[in-house]
Image 1 (cartoon, rainbow, N blue to C red):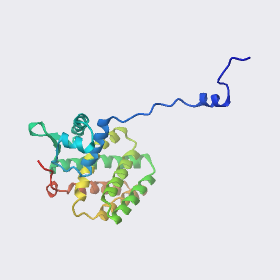
Image 2 (image 1 turned 90 degrees about the vertical axis):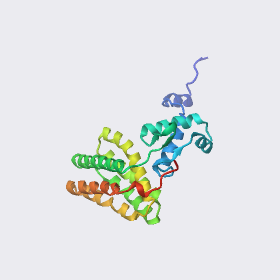
Image 3 (image 1 turned 180 degrees about the vertical axis):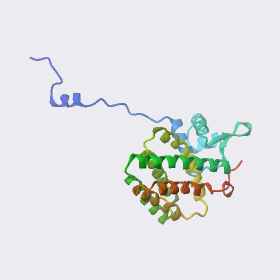
Image 4 (image 1 turned 45 degrees about the vertical axis):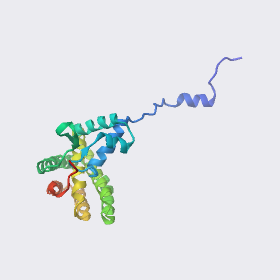
Length: 236
């Protein structure tokens, strides 16, 4: 009698299956940071809002430790700052910060446009977020429009095939997203915002570098016109 085992079809299939990694659980501090970061960049937590650990811990049903750690992560992101008596608040927006953010956005996107055209990359992927923005504008869905706008610009950066540019863009877009969300809270025609994107794609498809650079530059400049004094800050 043979002593061999595990030679049947099922055992053979198992032996041919690639090793599977364990299920990873996201640390609580990361989950909390993601929730707070989203609340800040969407304008739910407005500039100047004091972040009270006990209140946030109660709302999120967690202890104060992950709240404190998450707030530190957000301070590293530049979205939170320390004020008197060591309290933390959502960092207020200033005209200078908006201007500098939009200036950097313009430089990043102009570089991206030049690289996309120089590399001959297809820009077909940019049409999908354009269509989503148009639908969101028609229904008055501000959050969906901002989300699709992020997809559009992130895709443009990805098409440039520049790794460092992509890494830097991620941090910069946190502020851009916040500025857009706060600006859109006031009377802004969402159709105008959505309508600025298709011409950029058309210029790229036509390989018209001058037109594409001009359009992305004007797009960045339009956001820089936002006055942070027009929004109400959170309680001190």
